[in-house]
Image (cartoon, rainbow, N blue to C red; front, side, top):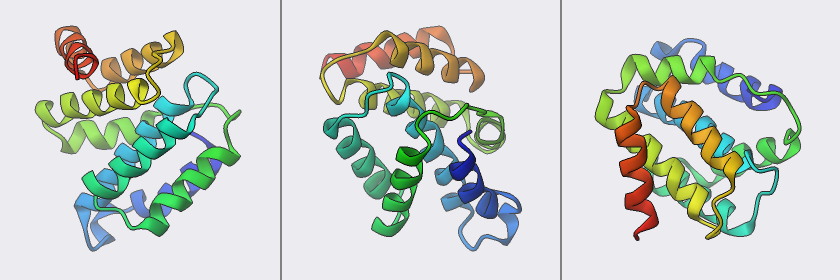
Length: 149
């Protein structure tokens, strides 16, 4: 993952049992993967940023400060290499299948936030869905559901 984001999350994810709210730790890992979707096409538009901020603050109950810090770190490291293992493994370990499929649906929401699905965004979501062990059928179902909204 991006070096700065990895460092940001490492403090929280290193020992989730010491974090007062374990759910928050898992949601931070989820937020990292969602950031990867908006960065996939090397163009982060205002609509995508607004959708991501809304998801992070409302769906995952992150403070405005935490959301802004995450977004700032992501913007600073746009060109960096990606390593999803730490976040994917945490999510796979603690999220059931339905929660992982819902995460893929959220990824599609971000990809369609600017009304332009880039092939790089689709590729990134497909790769993450595979790593999260979400079936191809549910991957497509989520895409069609979001596209029809």
